[in-house]
Length: 234
Image 1: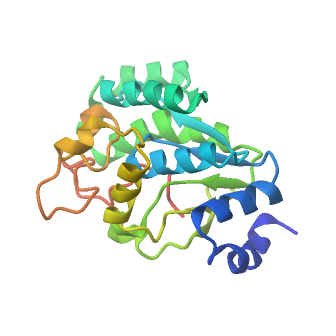
Image 2 (image 1 turned 60 degrees about the vertical axis):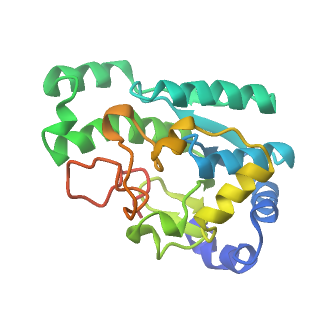
């Protein structure tokens, strides 16, 4: 039976499990076919801690777009040092990056939504596709609170673009719950979070948010969009 056809049955087994039990269950069921993509945001730092400190056999990787904040790269090093675990880094294909910059310029993503999506595709979507190829479960740090277009998601989702089941173990966590867990467990996090950067992506595409703005308002703030880069489209 295909992964997609198994989704309803898996939901019945996973929906009421907490993050640790859910991760263990899927890692045991889909051995060597479960991966976690971390952007090193606060949610993802929680999941990294859950995986490592509970000895859950899930491979962890991250995407280095070439435009990350220095603070993000420093956090990567601190995370690897704390947990004594290497996080695999995936990079954009060099010919694709060179062609993109030649066509758009180094900051061409400011010029149009189409340009921005092209940049996101080359720097993030294509490397992600490589990482997910042949896998069954993709673990993410999505939370329903983050934005309106994530509020109707389920813990287990079918990702059509990558032909994979996506597992969102922190989907029903509140922001305050997440912060309390980080503080209680001494989890390293990006210092930019303390400066109003709630959702952190590439440096040219991320700003701090003001009081009352939704969490992802600081992403691609110059355009009117759903604040998604293409990684998490259903």
